[in-house]
Length: 340
Image 1 (cartoon, one colour):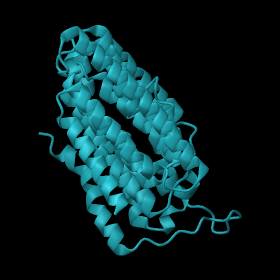
Image 2 (tube, helix red, strand yellow; image 1 turned 45 degrees about the horizontal axis):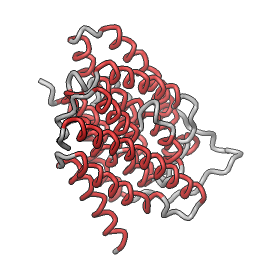
Image 3 (cartoon, helix red, strand yellow; image 1 turned 180 degrees about the vertical axis):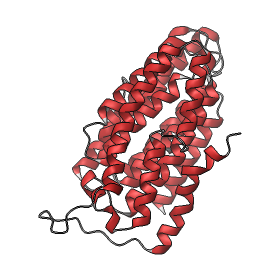
């Protein structure tokens, strides 16, 4: 019962934050959202889980302080808490830093890999997807008042550091964390020029990441070594995982290529071709570690007489696989088919 109430609080706080028009109400809802997710992070009785919950709380509390500072300063200057009335450059920039800190973008991204590594796979799914909806909605509302140069700089740095950070990772949760950082860079980079493209990108990422984490949870896959033996658990899940990874990497003709194409087109339209070129080059870093993971998943069979012990995993039942397959297949192939 307590878990259900906390989960309801998590959902309601996000919905209220996205529907609010006042910075004070949004700050209150984000605080409730933070307090609702903390029990899920610290539920596992392990020092890593407690450490992850502490890091998450401190980071979110710092971001909330910056958000309240920016909202109060803006209310003092304009006489209103309205989100659309942020004409001051200092307050809008401070608000952008606060909201991007909550989502995990450069330079305030260091908490995300550690928190995901200390959480369970399902909790990491919540942090990577659901917890980004409320801050992203607030950024969408104030997108007209964000300084374009600052947003472009944050976006390019996030795509670069997200790609470099995921190169040497053997833990899948950390790799997904750096992938989230890179994806948030794609989202922020076009926030001031085409906010709708940013929303398309973040929701496409959520649609792709959800079945990926669910497959990892069902097969108890947490490291690259586990990926090499995933085929023995479920060949169908292995194939689906490979397609999802390629789609998340933005490889055409999968779904993940669609928002990147829209963002590149918008940057070129705004005469930002050099920035678009650099962003595409940084996406190759993300593509490299996704291709490595896909190779380990589908094209590498370990020797039958392995000297190292393989972690025991329960076989996936047919019902679980068939329930997950439509979601993963739709998220991988559906959206490109809808392009006129």
